[in-house]
Each structure stands twice: as C-alpha cells, then as structure tokens.
Length: 482
Image 1 (cartoon, rainbow, N blue to C red):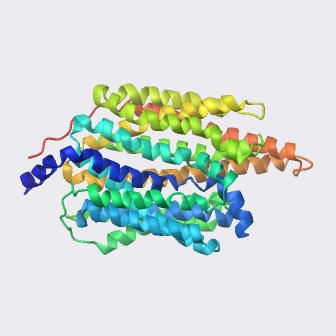
Image 2 (cartoon, rainbow, N blue to C red):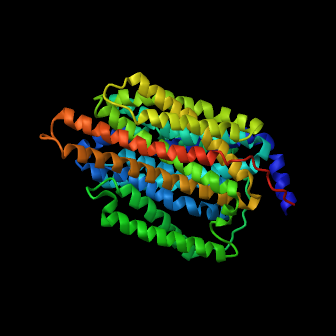
Image 3 (tube, rainbow, N blue to C red):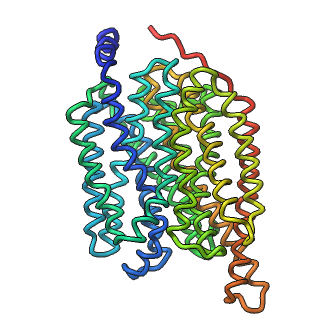
C-alpha cells in the first residue's frame, strides 16, 4: 500500500507547479485577511456605530476560530483528500467574504468574519502538509520558502492594501476585491489540484476535539480580550478564560498520550529540534503581529500620519519579506539553518533595541528601514527553522507537526498583540495620570510614545531569548522509513 502511494506521488511530481499554484493563490488571500482590517477599524467604528472594544472582535473572533480549527486539521487531513479539503475550505472562505462585503450591520459582518476564519483555519495546514509529501527533504527549503511568502508577506502587506483601499473606496471593497481571486483559486484547484495525501480515516475522539476547542480557544480568547478593558490581564473574563484554556490543554495533551490514534500527536515534542523550532516560531509570530499592530498606532498617533501613509511605510518591509522567503528557503537547502537563523535573530535583537528608542522626532525613513530590517530577520528565521524542525518527523507525523506549529503560531500572534498593546496602554495611562491635563494632545502623544518604547523593550527581551535558542538549532537528518 505504501509503495503504491509513493508511486502515485512520483507520477504527479511533474505537476508540482500547478498543485502549488492552486494552493498558494487561495491561502495567500485567506491569510491576508488576518491584518487587512487593522487600519479600517476607525472607519468601521464610525459607519457601524460601535465601540473600539466591539470592533476588535472582528480580529479577535477571526483568530479565535482559526485557533480552534487548526489543531484538529490533522484529523481532517486524514479523513478527506487534498482536493476535498482545499476546495471545501476555500468555498467556505469565499462565502464568508461575500457575507462580509454585503453586511448591513456589525453582527452580520462578524458572522462573515467567523465563516472566513473557518476556511482559513484549514487551508494553511493543507498547504504545508502537501509540500512535505510532494518534495524530498533536500528540496523542501525552497518550497517552504514559497510558503513563507504567504505566511509572512500576506499579513505584512495587509495594512498597506487596507490603507490604499480605504483612501479611495468604501470599506466593503476590502472584501469584494478578494472574491474574484478566491473564486479563481477554486476553479484553478478544481482543474489542476490532485490528491497527494493518504486517507486513513482514524477513529474520531469527540472528547479530544472538545478539549482542544476549549483549550486553544480559551487561550486565544483570553489574550485577545486582554487589551479591551481597563483591567487588562486582571479582568475576570481574561484570567478565567486562561485558566479554562490551560486546564483543557493539559487534559488534551494527557489524553493524546494515552490514545493509540491521537488527534494531535504531541509525541513530536520528543524531538529537541522540533521543540526549539516551536519556541522560536512563537517568539517570531509575537514579534511580527505585535509590531504590525503597534507601529501603525504610533504612526497615526504621536506622529499624526494618515492611514494611507502609515500603510505605505510598512510596504517595503512586506514586499522584501515576500522576496526574501523563497531565497532563504534555497539557502537553507544549501547551507542548513544555522547560517540563517543565528544572523536573523541578531538582526531582530538590534532592530527591537532601536525600536525601543523611538520618539516623536524619529524620522519616517528610519522607521521604514527598521521595519524592513525586521522583516528580513524574520524571513531568515521562520521558514528555515520550520522546515528544519519538520524534516525530523516521519511521514505519518507530518499532519501533526504542521498542525502543531500552525496552532502555536496562531496562539502566539494573539498573545503577542494582546501583551504588547496591554503594556503600551498601561504605560500610557500611568504617564497621563501624572500630568495636570491628560487631554492635551502633546501629553497624549508623549505618553503613547513612552508606552510604545516600553512595549518594544519587552520585545527586545524576547528577541534575546530567540537568539539564545538559535544557538542550539542544528541541521536535522530526515528519518529513514521503510
């Protein structure tokens, strides 16, 4: 059976390009939606007549659903074919996008976002697992680098595209402009996408799914809600959700270790390289997502720039990140992870240190250069380390490894945004409490600048930890399988 399966993949090797194109087009626009709305929140608050804490659920809800679905994606990939998974998920995403574009009020818009997220949560694991099946270990770096173009490039340019669209069109075009590409992706996949994974239909453990949902959902919800109220991390809504999530994840892991056919095989963490990779990716996603949120706030707040200008400042970094990912993937194939990951983390340390010193007199050029360097550093780390970690797994563990890493990145993104915004808001409030008139624009700008500096100082600590982890990363040898 295994030989027959391998033979079918070999026959389809000449079709790698159309298979990858089918997946990449759809996943790019799905991942883009994670940050596409960030700069549009101000317009949405005004038009939909809701509060900032309410509008934040368009982002929180999206990340919450993705955080719930990604862990069970390993199970779905063993129950459904590649075509069924991708075309089904893209269809769900497209329906959600249309609902968002036509939404008459906030409630319908939120429902559309949750439908979008349901499709997005299943797409990325399908793409990564397909690469692991289609490409031998010595060629995976380049292929995974192409995926990096999606994972890093799409959310990085989201704010820029949003600023451009909002400046000239209605917010609904943030969704309408995506629909043609989503439909094209479905049609393209229907014609060219072939099945590359093996359907085994393992036993479905309902209790594991429930524990996974409450566990990862609770953690994402807790940290995503932390920046909303005045109490922040000490709000009952936050710490109770975190406690429920932590207990559920603990029980989930315990159950997976006892099951013969676990939904998510956590035994992959027995690999030291995979574990170090997971820690490194968590820090990188916290750094990227928090910077993408905090930098526009600083640009539009203390520096008083427009949404369009703020978006354009982030554009060079996003573009270069997309160009760098395939290049770093090929360099990984040739030189291994250490010559990329160690210099990459050094760049992140320097950039976060410089970000921690920003002020209202910092030039726009300087901020553009720093964000660009940040993206270069992250591109040198993300896909090379991820490919290296997954290379150490056996074929049967590919779906589990990709699901785990994608879940941790999603949770890390939520934690990073909540943590950095909470730190910024807390420091800003403390600064304003010590001035005679906290409503004066210069006082507000100065207080926010101090909050941004403190946030990036904490980011610097995480960057140093990432550098230390990078020193222990070694090139893995793919296991020999019968």
